[in-house]
Length: 244
Image 1 (cartoon, rainbow, N blue to C red):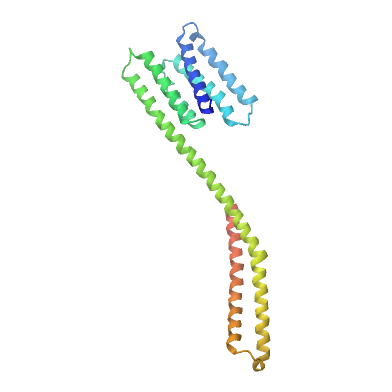
Image 2 (image 1 turned 90 degrees about the vertical axis):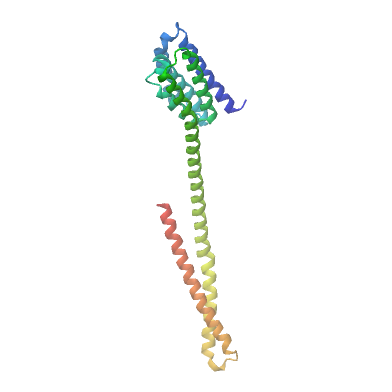
């Protein structure tokens, strides 16, 4: 059985068992005591257990919280309970911590239970609470999906930032270790040639156009070397800004 089906089954069973417990007159008198025990169990589980898989930790914790919420609501009036809003928070928690299907299944079961309990005594207030419960489920699902998408987007942004920093580092290394030394070498050689040709003056047999071309290349190399230095400084500044 897949983890999604397993989680759904456990959550569904916890809802049904809690309802059966609260529906039994000989057991529901201990709702308060059971709630206290489950609360201690929840904090004890959180304190003593640290599984590597976060969902392995979320499942027992969520089942305990789910049971506590339902016990409180069933004990304080069900559909008319002043703690009815806890169900909305429960659906949001299920949709965020697990899959949206868990929130849908939990909502469907709880709505069916409330209808079974109150089908002969439904009034306006109870109907409004039921409708709000039904409408809250898709809202919780949509919210959880959007929240997960935002987290994924942030993760992608972090990956892109890391890749950008790596690219900037590689660019700086390439400029400082390869580009600038190569440009400097070519520039020095070109400058030596220009100085040599200038020293020979008219004794040089080369056409003047070639000498002028070498001077033009020298000027371009100086400009290119200066641009490489400026680019190196710009990348360093941007890297410092990103780190801040």
